[in-house]
Length: 316
Image (cartoon, rainbow, N blue to C red; front, side, top):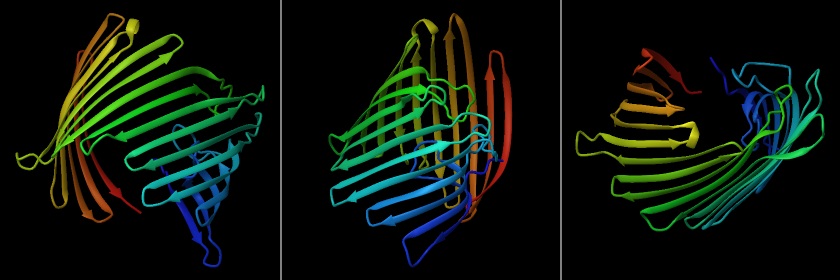
């Protein structure tokens, strides 16, 4: 079981201060933002800021660990009018491993919205513990525009360098550039989504295409349908195709889902085909308590699997 949020919070009446202790997610920090520790946040009008201190949870299991103490701070600003929404936040933190060199990272992020047009930007940088070199490890731009009431277009660019301040002997490596373009057409209770993505790495390039058609609350028993297809082409590395259909229906306390999918890959002349089926039923017992039953079956050339699960979900 993974615990992502378990904290005690105190909001003071005399001053605009909030203090949190426990495991929490710092929504004002876009980088490595799960903490086991404490945070003090001060909000004054549109401006805000705070300090955090504690430990980094285990990256793979979110377990408790004291191997990577860390401390940092952040600032943020928010502007809202009838037509404009703009937020910007910046953060910096240091990591203090017990038997390793000091590491640090920093970032800045902004989101802008104006009358059906928007742009998001994000910059992240890390300092290498040995060379003291600062490198941009993530640069991202996203923009969208509502060309009409029915048509929306999105474009994105992202440049990433693999690096983690919580992994021993981590190096700056594997620079990757990604470009994306998506168009969404809405008509009545129909949605048509078409997208393309280009991935460029020094020795590996790929192109992917996706297409999805959604039919919400169809006349057939008020069921919502979704048909999709995804094709990936890695040039000399091979290609893959994934397609399927899903159906869902919501009742007073029930949500029912089912789906069929087919997958086929061809990697360096090694072909593989697989099909899968899932059935899912959610029943809401109370406002914050629900039970879920799920079946999933997979049948392929080299594998056959059936899984049945029953889970209880509680919101706090």
